[in-house]
Length: 68
Image (tube, rainbow, N blue to C red; front, side):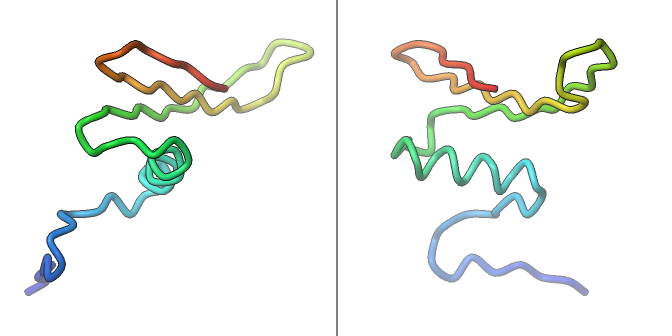
C-alpha cells in the first residue's frame, strides 16, 4: 500500500511539472491558496512562433491575469 501523510498540514501537493509551475507562480506573486492558477501548454506549427508555449492564468477575485 502507498500512503501519503500530511504531517505538516500542507495538503496534497501536485508533483507534476504543471504543479511545480503553479507553486513557483504562487510563491513569486505571494498568492493565497484560494487563488486558482491554471497552467497549460499549446503547440504551434505556424512560422515565427515558438513550437510550445506555456500559458499561465491567475484567477483572483480582484481580476484575471494571463502570462505566456
